Length: 348
Image (tube, rainbow, N blue to C red; front, side):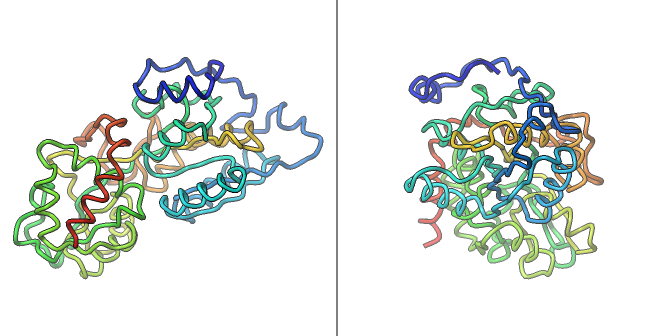
């Protein structure tokens, strides 16, 4: 990757997207196997790498196990929380001195755009990003997407006979009081989705008002939404697809539709903090996430991958089969807080 720009220049360039920078792998520490000469040269021994993430605990534990197996000189410590809680923790740490983590792995691009704009992130030194679609890689190299997490319509096959196939369907009187969705103030994906819906001409304020009028139940996060659909407490859920897929695999009466009027998604970005104590190991961790090995692990965890040579989860559609919404991410980042406030105002 090219030499990082000054913070002042970087902040100016966050306003408008630039042509992607050339990303040159400068780390010797491989993402896919074995320790590097650079890291093993550390005579002090094991390096501690701290990761802040919104990943489900069981999934991040698997990632850490695989990374540490490939990089035995690195000891990964994880703090796991919802994206909103992570933002609060990071803000508190910045006020008291510096961020106490090396890596951030969380749901939505706007969170990373904000941190890049105010100098909290460093540019990445990785190589596997070259295998990804450019839309999953920050043009200035501050973050890279690590898995595709679409938000879809899940429904209980035992209680719903006429399932919704579009966002527009959710405003039908038939679904009044039967919809569950995650709280956008807690879930990064839900916050992002709210801004995307508000930004979509075919949906916008009118649709959000009609959705709120249908009295959806707002639960803490995607996990409880999936469970509510699985046990029939809610007939329909607005939820990330892997949650519904995993419940169906366990035998729950749950099925999904990818909305015909467009599917919002987050790419679960990863980035390295400017305060990182171990930037080489931090970059190696991010590189592992988007390596073929890391992406095959993501697929085994029921995620859609960000590279096309890792396959897809059993029963999941290929990305080419999904009508993914790709809004202007800068507009979404700029309007996300206002979108959440608007939606909350509708709930009374």
